[in-house]
Length: 242
Image 1 (cartoon, helix red, strand yellow):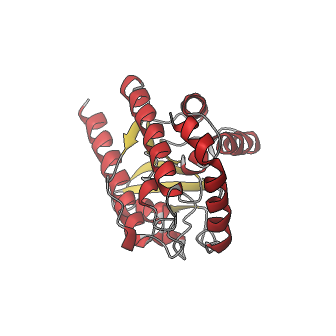
Image 2 (cartoon, rainbow, N blue to C red):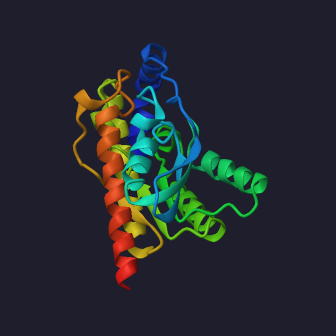
């Protein structure tokens, strides 16, 4: 149904997309280191992987972004060796290529926990939902096979129908597409035990978004990072009991 509507609305959607791209500020990735160590205690290695949200677009420094929030909280309990591997504009296929290149350049790369932020750029593309799910499967297989990952967290696609920068009907259309992607991802998660699907809030607080109206702001990164840490700590606690 969405593809029929897309055909009907295509001229309007393409026009609105060009206007949004032209008038929306192009925010940089957050400044700061992309790898390091922090804290004391039991060792934990963490990789943050993905797109512009993973890269911290929307805040000025990495310590305000997803990576900084996750590392700073975990470092209160663990010795955290961490790395950020993310690129603004990347979709799932490009992220798979980026990870494969990193693996080729650094043999024996291992991370106990991997946090993935992807989906928005896939929703913005002509990619079908089914092909996107196959790409998620390929990414999960690559991560679990090559990184020896014990905790893999994927984040749901944000509710793009709530992005304030998007005009109607483009906002409605992308909102419907992001919901369709999430429905299929949830179905996949229910039969795939190798990853946890994170949903840290159904409603998007527009006031907490970045100045471009498209990326997370500092408060959203804080909530997101705390949700990631809560999942990791719960899984670690469960592993210790077992």
